Image (cartoon, rainbow, N blue to C red; front, top):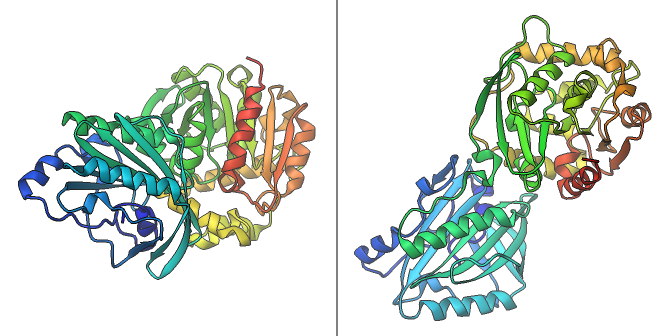
Length: 483
């Protein structure tokens, strides 16, 4: 069977790297020459690491009556493989390359079987999962290529593997990219193009850095309000994302950010006092954080970007629109609160749960009880960021005071929601324990012409749980904003 296929599932369950069937047969010198045409970790974006090619038979088994061909283990063919991980488990990437008189025929047979095969069963670490297989429309890789999407669920986490087979000169091979949800074709295409190019020429063919926000380096820019640390990804109109209480850049679900980056130049950053972003002098208010966000927009030359805030980030976004209206083209407020003193405060138990050191308790504040698998998916996705800084206790305390002032109606900018005149989308989960729905409804009445949306069976982190429908809703809304 395939060497890497569904290896992301193994990584999620076993906490190991990519798991592959070992090579066999070819002389060491021939295999070494072939291996030089595989991608190496130096060809991949920052954040990716190489993992050993190891037997998978003890952990992973794939059964399907319609899949019998296994080109990379065919006698008489020289075969080599490489495997990589971004973060501790997923996304994962594998490459297989073969050469020999029967290579083209064996890969052609494998393609025919995949085209006609629609399902398989995955057995991993004692669990079984049904796998759906379908051909995938995909840009051509090398001289010829085919692509297939494998979707399955393991430990409550929806996973996908995109398998691309290709020909490159005298070499036949495949790449397999596994991730949570369905990976963007452009991301897989970047890996596949680089693999085919190196197979054909033997020279380095680097994968572009901008395939995932987790691979983007942290930059620091100087502003009149101190230094601000940020990452950015994508091309198109600028979209600034403002994080909520106690969060950092690494709190954004990379799948959500990467999806937005297909259309926008997305900028995420650390708020005052977090990571390499300068702390505020004295007390820290929502308006202070809005002013620092304004300074970042100026420093990066973003002009009049779209602005999306989550939770406390919606307060900062509103204050930005009030204090610096020329720097906001449109607002997307995700789990928002009014700042005029009419806020319905969440139960203290939910607030305490959000700050709990126990991950499952914190997830319970963000996701409904019957959607904790979405919480597991979120934790797995955010784990692909390189280790980063967390909010210091003193900053968390300052943020609490800033939020209290906003809720009480004593924040100056929060007192003037009617001053917001830019197009505004307000959305939340219908079961948000941290933000009662009355708050979004009240804010929609205060911001003239705003649009209000609720997602059923979703909580405070609805934007990640329902990314598949929320991102298109954001894109549709922003597409209608006048230039």
